[in-house]
Amino acid sequence: MAEIRKVAVIGAGVMGAGIAAHIANAGVPVVLLDIVPQGANDHSTIARGAVAKMLKTNPAPFMHKRNARLIETGNLEDDLGSLADCDWICEAIIENPQIKRDLYKRLNEVRKPGSIVTSNTSTIPLNVLTEGLGEDFAGDFAITHFFNPPRYMRLLEVVKGAKTRDDAFAALKQFGDVKLGKEVVDCKDTPGFIGNRIGCFLMLSGLHKAKAARAEGLSQETIDALISAPVGLPPTGLYGLIDLIGLDVMYLVGRNLATNLPADDTGHAFTSFPEAEQRMFDTRQLGRKSGGGFYRMIKDAEGNRSKEVFDLDTGNWRAESPATLTESQRAAETLMFEDSVEGRFAWDLMGGTLSYAADLVPQISDDVVNIDRAMRWGFAWRKGPFEFLDQLGPRRVIERLQAEGKPLPAMLQVLADAGAESFYLAEGSEYLGLDGAWHATPPE
Image 1 (tube, helix red, strand yellow):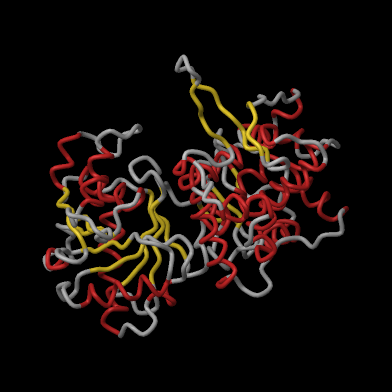
Image 2 (tube, helix red, strand yellow):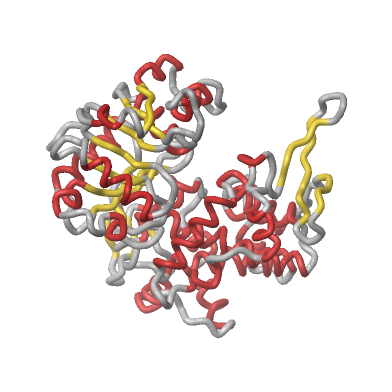
């Protein structure tokens, strides 16, 4: 099995720079390259600036600031030759298949034979990325999908193509596990893999379902309060999470999912933005990266900071009004079955997401375990979809879906047919398989 001693990262944006920093944290030298900005005197200003910014970033991408010395910065016009002795080249550029393939053609001219090339794509299928690039390139190519920020998020999704060399894939997995300390999950070559297939469904469908909830009187602050701690999601909630990721990223994700999802996939209904969010995107009101999206921080004349909310229904900024939830709305077991605007919204969004996940076995994963781990490690869910269903009570969820006249998703049907009461037994030591039998849960 090949050893990875030196790495190159192409793309010095937030994700690419973060990947480079974490590889440097492992004591491995990294080459970080990006484009030359038009008219720039310093051709490598993007990569140099990214490293300088990370030295000031909190939470810190570097475990020690001295690790930054392991990153050699450059650009794609002058420094492609520096890739010649790299064992792994990780591409982390814009989510555009043609731009990526054009880059790969340039990499092929300078990389050493047998060096591994991967994409950090979040949604583009591997077979689309290798189209027309030849057998040798396909054999050296895989997907290594990190989650942001790379130092802190545990998940690394890895995807092997039909032609990917076994030894190259094994080297990537070992490096991710042993050197980078990641929880490595094998994913199938399907749109969005595991984490983004489910996580982006939640966010994109959430924008549409939240629009309906606002029409019933829920504020944006209440929506975020509901889609956070009560259902075991991070405190950013729905709008806050998209502010963190960026509407531009979500727009590209939606476009790629619209192109690549199976024709009958429920997600097709949510791959474009509602009107208000589309206007935000069009005016480049993208989130934290643009100084404000759904939320922004402002300072008054005395330097005091406060948060404002961009009201989607009026198109104006207003002062934040913190949400107040009742005791029953602070726990998923009561919230999602409560006959209130809050309860109906939580059931519509979270129940819909759980049903979506339960219908993706074996399409995106052969078992529930990998799906649960991917959502916990990659999106910081407190519990994965099937663990969450166990918390709610799968039988109760089944009865609710049947009362609404909805078909049972694949794994809920397996559970019903098996006469099971949960997806896990004995504190998670066994899980319910697609075959309706119990299997030992692999150690984390």
